[in-house]
Length: 152
Image (cartoon, rainbow, N blue to C red; front, side, top):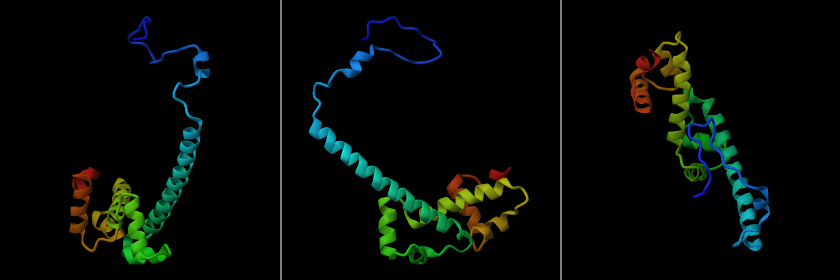
């Protein structure tokens, strides 16, 4: 395709061309479309950044309450919105309250299991499980292995 010598088993992959090609106008370039698309990208970036910041706030609030998760209504009240609004925002972010809670519990469980001095029943309590068996079942669902095997 490029009609150039090829070198195999090199330390890097690269190709080079004369920089004057970068100064050539694109044959199908349209300044109006470019401006519209650049503005659209800026707007989407702002929306994405705002949603990510909002999700970060939700995660932070919820992570501090894993021992007694507030439920969707309680979390919505802490976020100063209705449960319906919170549910809609989470849906737009591609997750649900339960998925977010499970993700945070799983992250924390892995941290606590890495500390050998934490017994499994204590980890279950810390994460808000009423029974150790419930925690074990959830951990197997999240990771595919029992907490004791994960630790081992």
